[in-house]
Length: 98
Image (cartoon, rainbow, N blue to C red):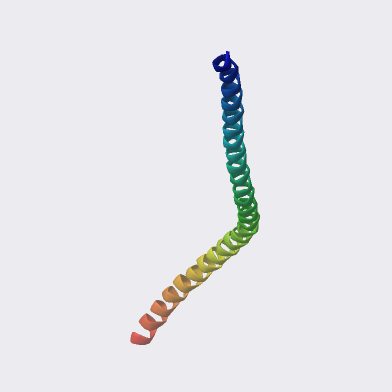
C-alpha cells in the first residue's frame, strides 16, 4: 500500500511542477508581447510625428508650385518682349546699314 500512497503524491507534485512551468512560460510570453506592444506604440508615435511633418511639407510644396507657375508666366512675358526687341533691333540695323 505504500507504493500506491506514493503514486498519487508524485502525480500531484508533477502536476504542480508542470503547472508552475506552464505559468512561467505564459508569464514569459505575456512579457514578450507587452514589450512588443511598447515597441509598436513607440513606432506609431514616430510615424504620427513624420506624417505631421509631411503635412507641413505638403503645404510648403503647394506654395512652391504656385510660385513656380507665377515665375513661368513672368518668364513667358519677358520672352515675348525680348522677341519683340529682337525684331525692332533687326529693323533698326537694316535702316542704319542703308
